[in-house]
Amino acid sequence: SGSVSDRDLQEFFAEIKHMHKSGVAITIIECDTKIHKVYDYDSKKDITIHGRGGTSFHPVIDFYKENSRKYDSLVYLTDGEAQTPEHPKKPILWLLASGRNKNENLPGLVIQMQHK
Image 1 (spheres, helix red, strand yellow):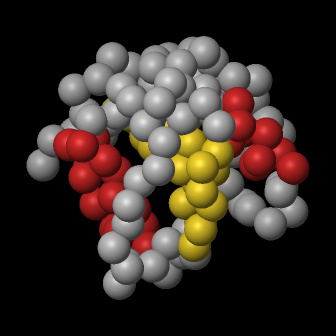
Image 2 (cartoon, helix red, strand yellow):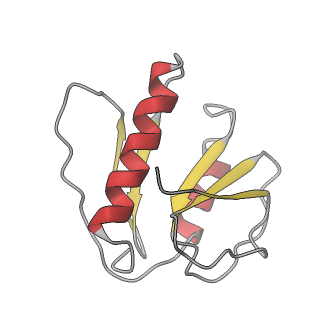
């Protein structure tokens, strides 16, 4: 979304890199009010972010529901600034950018990232 700063994106991709190093396969979904791009994360490739408009969690949640057999869980990296979505039947972990207001209404586990 447009409210996610370049610094937030750096923080998000540092976290994604650490998750990827643990051996998990990661699919990136770039979304603001709609999904712009879906791709497998590759730490060796440069990433250009698409969109950066308004914010809606619903397109990613809908994608997750529609592809529930393909994915074990959803880790949503966000600033938390959007309307609260309904909770899908599978787990969601929300990682909120450091320095942002924590949105306790998000369905699932919410973790506030900390500056390193």
